[in-house]
Image 1 (cartoon, protein in one colour):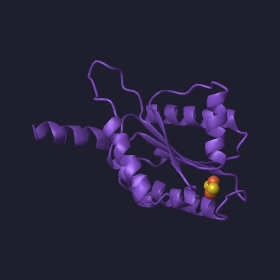
Image 2: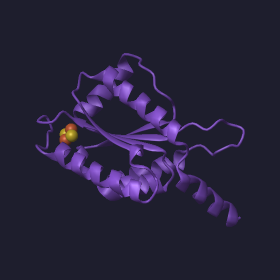
Image 3: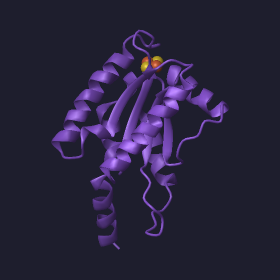
Length: 166
Ligand code: FES
């Protein structure tokens, strides 16, 4: 999980500076397992299927390896929506990793609702390696969902904090 934390931190460093002149676009993370989800994403890429540039893919060996704190940390950093993409039920290469991930995602959704961030900002889906168009469809739906919910309120409070520290 050290690796996943590192990836989250590196992604943050590479994020473009926000500009008041640019229209807001939701920032989405798709956590993809290295098996079916990765293959579906790769197939979408080789078929030249498009999705918005604000979507970042983070690979993980299995969705079962994504801990609650990884998801909460990403939201704390200002991400507007997270999609967790794993293998079909019964198809996880770590047997029950995707089932654990689903239970975890449900718990995190409840936490997000409790703290006012809205559970709809997180979604878990199960795909097979050939489901490239479904992969893109799920990404686009999450982008639209985040757009409808508006920017993550933690992002603006972080920006205000940074401005206050100048
Ligand atoms: Fe794909 Fe576990 S290996 S979800």
